[in-house]
Image (cartoon, rainbow, N blue to C red; front, top):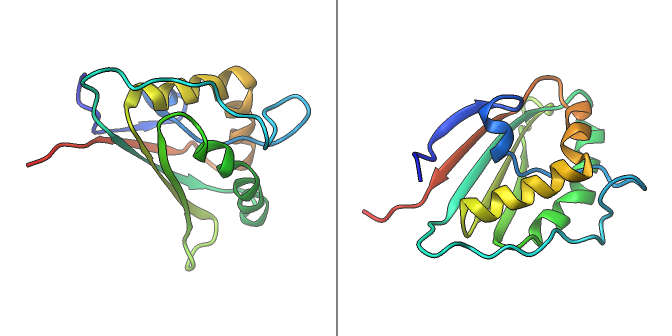
Amino acid sequence: MTSMNRRAAFMGAGFATLGLVAVSSAAHAQATEKPPAAAAPAGSHPVTVVLRLSAKDPAAFKAHLMKTVPVTRVASGCRYSHSFQDPQNPAEFILIQGWDSAAQQQAYVAWRKQTGDLKLLMDFLAKPPIVETFELFDA
């Protein structure tokens, strides 16, 4: 696997690594709907994905996350998904997700893309997110 340390904009190379959540609506994934199962490939390493997000409406975006992060947490390979809001600048959010493998995270993102949820995400944001992916190594 190529280096997983990268910084990317939503619509560029980072689009494939974005593993965020989506608005629950009739046309999109419901809070009770689960992403498809995906196994970690042999020899894969855990990854941490950091998403830096700027919301147009912080209260609406926070409510969105409260409804949809639980769906991310039940995805195959998702170890955790934590959401943080900057108390000094409430429009700024950071999501930190741990995954068993990059392949599982990417399968989750593909599911979100297929449902149209990634497009809906952009409606909440004031600018494209910054996505950083880090692969675990032991020194």
